[in-house]
Length: 67
Image 1 (spheres, rainbow, N blue to C red):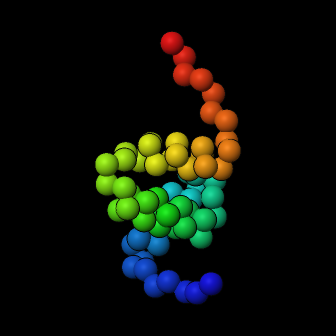
Image 2: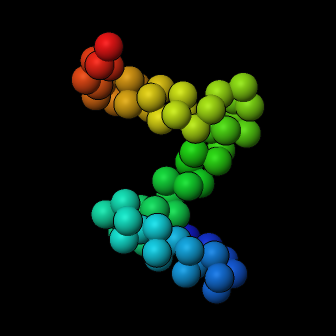
């Protein structure tokens, strides 16, 4: 584990987003980094595709879509 230096404005954005997502500031930053890394590795996938794939990998059962 280490320290990551980020701009004060970005840190404030992370803090605000973390309250909306009910995550710690560190967890929110980690989420954004992970999703960003996956988006760079798989440019054809949308954000929703990446998140869905992560849920599937974790074994989370998603409810069926309403018709």
